[in-house]
Length: 554
Ligand SMILES: [Zn+2]
Image 1: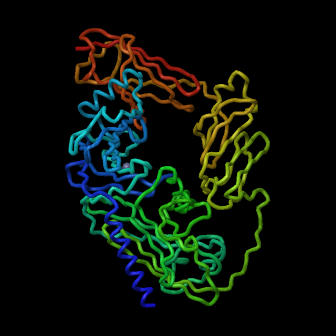
Image 2: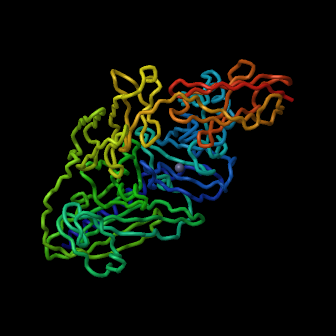
Image 3: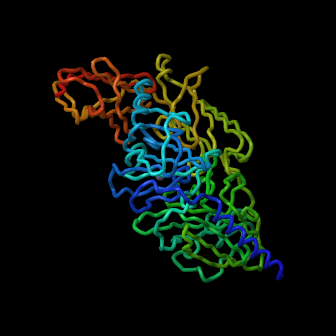
């Protein structure tokens, strides 16, 4: 016993030394203002774990962004959505830093991007400059912070990735200073009857603490068979009211450490497993995020350092189980929740299969056909076996239950009944009313989806809309002003836009969330006098709108 304890102590100290020495501690900060975070690494987000830190920029755009170390710019991406304007710097120590939602690039970088945008005649670019092209030094200003792409307010999204694997690592591991003296919060603890009973219930998740309004936390909770634990938890940092993610979650059953989740690293190829890590049904029914402290059979996420029996507790009749949940933030502030399970006899459930549903095994491929519809699910599309349901309502196809997660793209083909032949190439496949694409081939309209829902076909013959914000015939502009227009499409979505002045392509900044197209005179060579501005916008089904106005440059 004594040797065992000693070796545990020895191993623990080894792990700690290891954890402290793993990551370089000499990177500089990307902003030279106090680091106040509105988002932490691996925070729970729709279909992904947050890949970096969201650093507050005092509620405004235009704050200097600095290279955190020497290196070279290995990628620059400009997109109307997602990361917006983003810079990637590869450093000689094996890590790449990423700066996103930028307002604008600075110096040589700005000139380089502009040249590429003009030569490709595209605002959206994804550039991979060669190693010697754009060198940067530590603390050099590379950009101004902004709100570009899919950002919900001015901030810097900052990541550090392992260069070789492109895996994002928690930037906090690199020794950044930030204030966090607040403990994480535990807002709910749950027991799941995986194959058994929890709190008298065999079907639904049991919320610890309350049952029909009565506090039961200090009374043992009856359980049987296989059960799992879930926790709703958040962390708060100093200086911001945001509900951030915690750093680690640990589960102890009768003092045995059975489960650990740590927000240290997450790969983009695994990030969608968040839909298995969390209670998808709970989230989809608008009740918030529950971290499951047990793993579904199909959960391959590599963020668990301990997963004894996949975190599942085998409850034996007559035995009691002391459950201790410990959540910590990166600074080590912790919150603990304890309760007791008392084992009852497990009475196996007789499986009653609903007549309209089909059992789909999680790890094998499935094909499904019904009147006017064909579906193909590749192997490992689900995290556990599911009951697949299908029904036809009018011309719509209700495919699966939207509170069940799907991990991989499945193929869906719908027969275009009642759609005239000349409209087939204008037909889109919709999920819950929104287009997911759709290609006509061999009598079917086909595309892919990663989510269950109600699928239907719709014909799109409506061209996009162009609404001028500040341009009418004869409008005047100065070198500091901008032409602004709003563009939108009703169904298929915008595929392309082309802005021209006097017949020559011009660079227009597109911000998808505001549907806003902007032309800035600042960097352009437009002579004083009369000019013609022209814009064509095309949707994904080839419907096109053209807009033309004359203006005067002063
Ligand atoms: Zn972010």
